[in-house]
Image 1 (cartoon, helix red, strand yellow):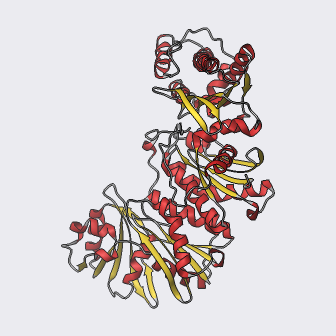
Image 2 (cartoon, chains in turn orange, purple; image 1 turned 45 degrees about the vertical axis):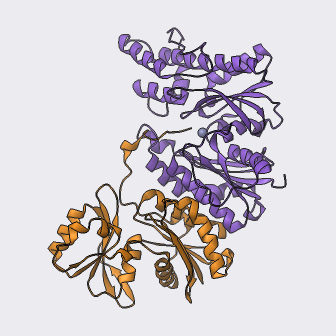
Image 3 (spheres, rainbow over the protein chains, first blue to last red; image 1 turned 180 degrees about the horizontal axis):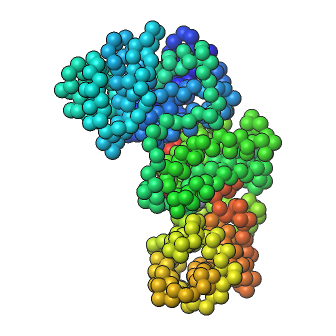
Length: 232
Length: 332
Ligand SMILES: [Zn+2]
C-alpha cells in the first residue's frame, strides 16, 4: 500500500509518499505562501524521488485543517482531485493531530495550537497512548488568553506545540508546569501525515473524495461580502 | 491541433462548472452548479462561502461532466482551468484541481483567462464567425468593449470607470428591495413596465468608456422624490438607459473599426432587452450579430474549453507551477 500525503494548512506546503516501509520521500516549502503554484510540482518531484508512478498510489491522505483557509483548500482540492482522478480512497487527518504526533513520546498533556490569525488560535489536547497519541479535547478556536486560562485551570504538566503556541508564547511562558513550544514543532509535516494515515489505512478508515470535509471551525465572515471584486 | 477533447473547469466566482468540448466547439457536456441560492441569503457573493462550496462541488461536477460527455478520463487530451481574473480563493480550487488531474492522468494542463473565455463563448455556437469583431463583454465584474482583429488578438476600446453594468443592476435591485442577483429580477419586472422616466445616459457620446455609478444615483434620487412610481416603470426605465448606453457605444465601435459583426458575452448578455437591442442594431447596420445562448453567457466551463483549445494550439501547455491571478488582464 502506497500513500500520498498532502499538507498545506499552514504557511508551509508539503507532500510525502510512503507505506509499509515508512516514508519513501517527502518535501516541503515555506516561502511566500505559493501553495497552489508549488504543490503539483512538489508531488511530481516526490514521486520521482520515491521512484513510483502516481497510478501505484492506493490512498491519498490530506491535512483537513484547521488552518489558513486559502492554503488549506489548495491541498484539499488537489487531494480530492487526485483521489477522484485515480479512483482511490482518502484519509483526512487534522493538522492538530499532525503537530501533536511528533511529541507522542512525551508523558505530559500535549496542547497543539495553530495560529488562526485575528488574535485567535486553533487548538486541541492530546495524551500519550500505546502506539501513539489520543485526542482528549475537540478542536476549537479561541483567544490565546482563553487557552492560557484553561491550561492553568486544568493544572496538568503540559507541552505546547505548534506555530500558535510560538506566536503567542508570551501567553504561556509563565504558566506553572508548561513547557513552551520549540520552533521545530511549529508546522505539520507531510511525513507525519503519511505515518498517521498508514495506521488509519490499516483500520480501513477511508472516505470518498466527495465525503472529505475540511475542518474550518469558523463560520465564513459574511461582512467580507463585495470587498473583493465580485462576479464576472 | 491534435488535442481535441478538452476537460475544462471554471471556478472564478460562484459557479462551479466543468465541461467537455471537442475541437473547441462541440460541447459534449457543460455542467454548472450554481451557488446563487446560497449567496442570495447574504445579498451578494461572500468569497469564503463561495470557496467552501467550490471544494464540496468540484469533484461531483467534474464527474458529471465526464459521464454526460460519455467519455472516460483516458479520452481527455487537455485539462484546463480558469486562472483569473476572479475571486482568489475560488480560482485556486479550480486551478489546483485541474493541475492535479493533469498530473495524475499525464495530460497537459492549461490556465485560461476568464475574459478570453467569455469572448470565446461566441465561437462555441458559431465557430466560423468572421473577424474583425466587436465584443461587448458585460457582467457583474466587467463592462468592456473589445475589438477582436484575429484569434487571440484583442484591443480594449473602452471599459467602465466605476460600476460594472451587472453591479449597477445589483445595487439598484438592492435599493429597491428586490433581492439578489439584480439582473434577472429587473429584467423580469421590466417586461411589464413603461420606459417613461428619462434617466441619464452617462457618457453616451464620450468615447468608449462607461460609467454607471451616476445612473444608479439618479434612480435612487428619483425613487426618493417619487415614492408612488410603479416599480416596473423604474425597472424598465433603468434598463432602457443601461442598454441604450451599451448598444450605442458598441454600434459606434463596430462601424468605426469596420467590424464584420457584433457579439455580446458575460452574465449581463443574458438580459433579454440587451439581446433584443443588439439584434436590432445589427439588422439596421448590416452587421452580423451573434448573441450566445444564455447558458454560455453566464459563467460556464464550455467557454473555458473553447478558449483553452485556441490558446493551446498557439502557445502550448502552461507550467505546473501556474497559480491563480485574481487581477489577470486580457492580453492586448
Ligand atoms: Zn464571468
